[in-house]
Length: 368
Image 1 (cartoon, rainbow, N blue to C red):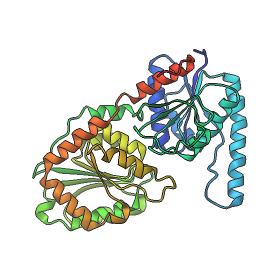
Image 2 (image 1 turned 45 degrees about the vertical axis):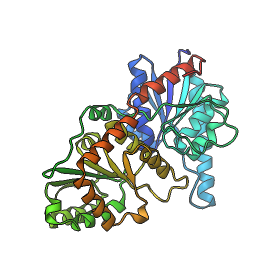
Image 3 (image 1 turned 60 degrees about the vertical axis):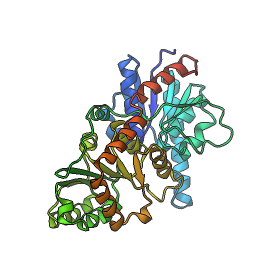
């Protein structure tokens, strides 16, 4: 293995940064030096990232907007590639690992030009556009779900199902046994992912209002709501005499998941993977406007295990949800079975599996 560090390329949202952080922690625990290459958003987060150094590389997304905006984004990516070429050429890392999203494109592309070993990790069940652009050039592709769609033609790199690495807080939450709800207690967690989701604010409170006072007995709700929705959601629960905590962000979300009887959520890769590792039953409402329909694919993977109920956003109505919650409260053992199915599907050692692959590629042995 080269004496150089491992470069991890990730930026944008927590969906890319969380698995990169988990890998970095695993490699650091093995005495391997890790450095993070990220964009401006990731640089703000980088103070908590377990890396010896954090490097900001120019990046942009060349989709959406007009012709001028796309041209500007491409120029920014080219500028980022030049910066990455200089950085990688200077430090000569043993491997560059990209976690998808356009912030990973300049570092991974530069590494392939310099013939530095490269690995992609795809968190979703459908390969994203940035990873598809790079996939034909890299040495190995790791993926979070058993099925990886959208690889395309011309991909010669071997693929490895490592799972999605999760944070230490998620592993700690996974040690908490599922508490089967009773007539007296039912803890409902509602989350919309890192950006929040207005549909949760629009649908869940009206659904709760359709339940009778007896059906609301013992119900406690923890709900993530966007800042602009927080007050109206909180007031709706207050009007229905429902105990609720409504905030735009929960720093301790894994422990909140562990405490939940049932989780209502979007179906981002991190959310689905963390639900599985912790082992909690869920209702998943995939984001319907994604070009690749990645959340729908993620949700389908978990639904196949029997751990979750998937509903299209168009069908996610207050009446449907009220009926579904009523049925769930009447069948606590069914929820417990779904919790067990979720945890059986979870891959708690994904960071170790991915770290093994990284080390093997660094050694020139691509057999994971």
